[in-house]
Length: 367
Image (cartoon, one colour):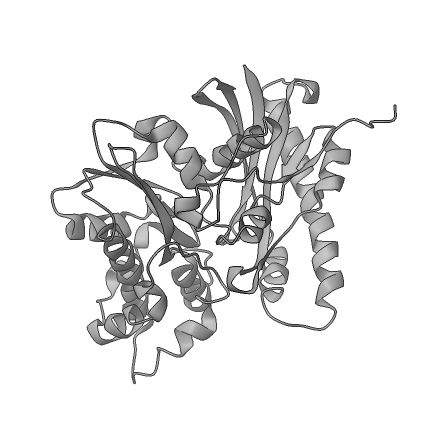
């Protein structure tokens, strides 16, 4: 049995998810979790790095150092909570914080200074998982479908997993072994930003504010006309496309009530997920994970679109909805250390299977 830690800080910019998992052959068990919210000032600094700015290179490096320190402290707090020593941990799989994702230009950038994280924790760190897939002609995302296939596939039912973070992504697991995976479009990020602007809150809990509004059909139609939605997979996206500027260009109608825009953004997420699922094969069960799995309005909207198709959460598969991606990056680190592929070419579009990630060993090889 191996113990690995996964660290995930996603496009929602809400904070750091840390998960301790055990791996034995093909089985995985989530043992402990820890969450550290991002301070508001840090979130603003990270958001600023998504756009061109003065001295952004130095800013990104310094922010990466700060993130590494936060990651290390989160790991130490997690280990202390379960009375486990760093020496017992095989590795940390750290996704890092995405600043730019431009596979069409041949690059992706996640910051977090993995060398510093290794020094601060004394644990081997595996990171930079996306670059090798992009170098091989892929999108570099989504990567978690490989983990989904290893842990959640079932030869008796067609399953789809939908992670609703800042961006929403789909994994289709056909009972015949077929796997599809791609980003469907915005998850929580547009609604979160709109809620912050009008309510001063980080998110709309359970969609309570959005529920006081109505869907603006014309606005929804215009947003769903975004060319990204019509692209065939493999495809991936992020804040480089779906951001405040993207939303502003659609808000050209007069006298829009903020709560109606919020309600329409919930509908946008639900409809884009539903449309993405329709590009897959027959779906018997849909399992939600990520922050959006807790939005009861979004879940109700999606269930209405799905009709009789079962809509569940990944807790029912043994991994809590908030921790699937963190566990996935622990698994990806394990794959790297075992010299096994971590991507699915049919998902990312890479030329073939690749061993992903860069390894920062905990020991000094000369000692």
